[in-house]
Length: 297
View 1: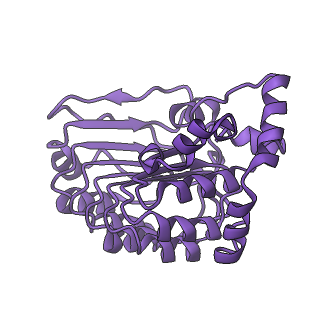
View 2: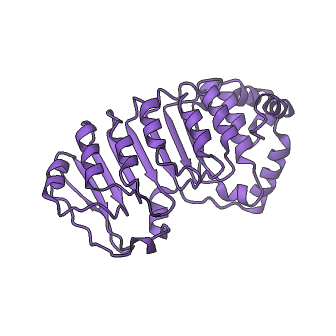
């Protein structure tokens, strides 16, 4: 997507006429380019999806620029999608996500991280019903907030019967919700809970239920604490309790580094090349997007 299709005819054919090259589209690690106005990642991602011609198996995006229009295009153009990662995609709403996820029945991996407009606690139940093959889920809430629906998301996760790995960040589940997940997700091998303040690991019953899970990682509310890796049948690490969990509203730097790809720096030559590339995107593709998917551009 950096302009090699303009070098010569052979490269143009390779870039635009080989759908197999676009089976995995990874747009992470470049959000700073969008923030600095050097690239339209939404537009570039749309072109990449169109070039896949229905062969896209994985889309990984990170930027506030992605919106419901793009997700709608992805849903219609990537029926074989198995992996979807959305990080800080604030332009995507719960309504748009709910509509799109229905069209990914083959999805096996889903990550929703720090997406401010995907806070509907019924979303994971929708995912469970729409994606019966889901094996890996990472759900990172952007902040801790008060709610009376402590276990609603947990009950949605409990319907994901093929789930093998689960990571939750700032979830409001209690021991009841965790027990439902462990009881119903019988294939679960990896459990990673961070900033889940309502879990009481002094409960012998919940410790016994989790004993069968091969890998368990738990973080304390202290940013200086490090996670513990557990061997099969190992004891569960006890967290320290805090009276005021609301003070931990934002991820600290080590949390971000754990699941964000590093930023990639660009020199002035690279930046100039990106500006040229933005002008070189095929006009016919832009017209097609505007006609067929008016919400995408």
